[in-house]
Length: 251
Image (cartoon, rainbow, N blue to C red; front, side, top):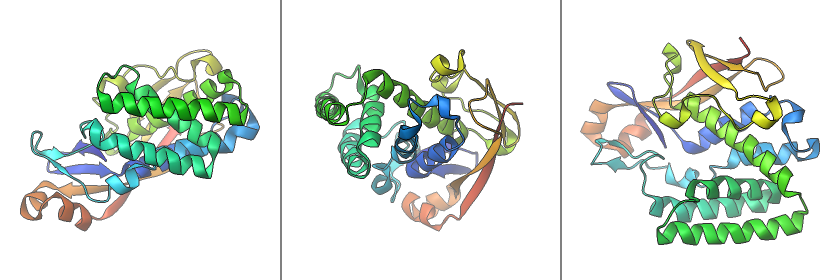
């Protein structure tokens, strides 16, 4: 779950909706961004479904007593997430092996410097999967690395949107979303500067997409008073689904 404190309510976006948003934006990318045009569909599937594991986890939000807020993907314990991640990648591999390989690489990168037993076991399983799929698919490592960076860019750009306040054009406060995006630097020739330039509008320079476009992000505004009255699970279920439209443009 993506959670943003909006004063009297929490803006809550399901992780799978975020990943679908990433894939929708990816459909506008230029062909030269991908390692090969024939892999484009698999890369976009990886972007759109990399958070498949979260569909089950986000059905019933959980409350973080320490923070006085719903658990988000930023503070949910790794031990809870890791088993779901592995199952989600299994499902994606069954649908599209190359997309499964990219998702495995994407998730493994989060735990490269981990030291706890659960994370190390996850890394070992995913590295075994990656070696097997590389051999089966016969794709060059440089091409996989390039396509993983596309997935990372789309994931990061969608998180930039989801962790912001689009209606007022105010960007996220998360440190790793500040500064230029470097994932496509080798293709674009320079890092991509990403900035809100007004309500519902983001400027990217240089611009990696074919044209300016807009996508909707589904979310729920969950009233804090309602949470106090009936609990987070019921309050979330009762909240109406809204859609916020955000435009990506070169100016």
